Length: 148
Image (tube, rainbow, N blue to C red; front, side, top):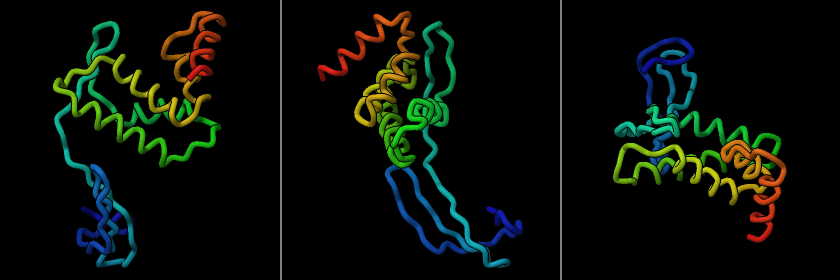
């Protein structure tokens, strides 16, 4: 690993903290003395997402987080809450017996987590995910949400 400031190859680890599936290390460059943070994650087998049209693509954690961020845009939801949901969704997916996961499973998990986080973010995501055709289907979803 190289220092992001001077490019030197030697650092010392100042602090190390473990999260659920990540290790956060605070490092100090032995040449310039500047500090920076690195995150380490155990490399796991690739998950394959099976789309509605049958296409397959590799699971992207960043794509999942981006979709959730978009739904939560301009809402009082912290980045930490989104990150926590993404971690939980990914853990649920990796716990499944098959490495191939239908995109509908991922969409339903996202909706479940967004419903807990914020009702408006949930409706935003659901309107795109479920492809609401008209105002009637939108109202039906709002009524379901109001009942719960």
